[in-house]
Amino acid sequence: MRTTKAARLLAAGAALTALTLLSACGGGGDRESEALGSKAPVPPRVTKPRVNVLPGMPPVEDPADLYAADRPGRFSPVVRDFPSRVYVPNTNSDTVTVIDPATRKVVETIPVGRQPQHVVPSWDLRTLWVNNDLGNSLTPIDPRTGRAGKPVAVHDPYNLYFTPDGKYAVVMASMDRELVFRDAHTMKVVKTVPVTCYGVNHADFSVDGRYFIVSCEFSGEILKVDTARMKVVAQEKLPLRGAMPQDVKIAPDGKLFYIADMMANGLWILDGDRFTRPRFLATGKGAHGLYVSRDSREMYVSNRGEGTISVFDFTQDRLTRKWHLPGGGSPDMGGVSADGKVLWLSGRYNAEVYAIDTRTGALVARIKVGSGPHGLAVYPQPGRYSLGHTGIFR
Image 1 (cartoon, rainbow, N blue to C red):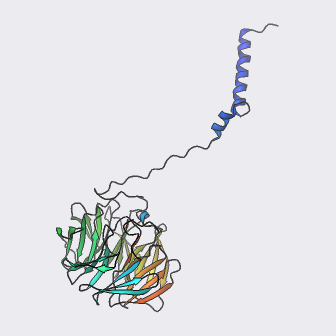
Image 2: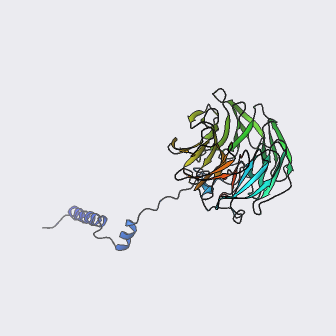
Image 3: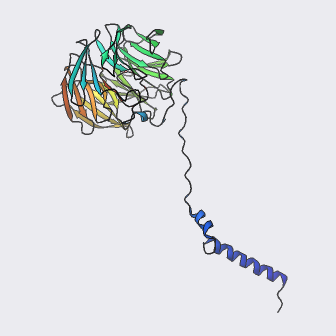
């Protein structure tokens, strides 16, 4: 029986469909095509968002972690040959005690100006500046040799910061009620910014470096300062009578600022961009210093009035532990060791320094120093540059 043309076309189509299905199931395709088809898809390349930073400021390595450059071992070539030391300014003794953290022994005592408050690493990491508040001077220390240089005349230097572009030092002139922008190298005055609050003392910068938050301890206020314009752009009274704000630190993701308050006994948590009313978290009596762990997960809060350190977890947004100094003490200002294993704090009212194990919270050393130890600096530390205080590195 002869098949019609339509029947032949229908049969051919059926055969072609069967062949296609067979090939798709792997039964008839060539091996090269099969191998290519079975490869895992190439994951898309993840690029970190760029931050539009203050002109001249180093780029932000990781916007999700501003402290990414502070990991153990990430030393700048500038500091790699510096001996590891703890520099302790003794406010009442007018000296700086130098401790070898490896032996936990005092290796030197350096005479400085009257009432040294903080030891501050310079933006370029090459110099440590001792803030002689009532001495109206800054004493430079060469961290390579440990030798002090000729003091530089600077009025009322309670504390010292550096703009993220490295151009200016910002002197917290607490009694003068001024923020004084100076050349970061010569310390010559560039601009004096009067403030209406009392007791400017601590600060930290935004992710992009375009503004910084300042605490005013004697009037219980905080300021927002435009970095490039060198101008106070916002001011707020903290919502507690008698508030006394101290140290300031930005969160690793840059979204919030934490402000220790020694009279409120805890932390104010502030949205710096919006500068709205902050919320409060109780930590302990006399909350004072704030220090971020080397893995950026935690922050150590020194509670000077009760001899404790609270541990705050950034991801959980809560306190997870509290460490008690055996026999009490007055933990104040300090810093974390380069490897992240030890938290060093001055004992403000006990003429001593504490070395605390950051894993267990155990006190591993209590070292006698001069009278009134305050803003000690652990140096050198990882990081590309310093924003000042006792060591805020990025």
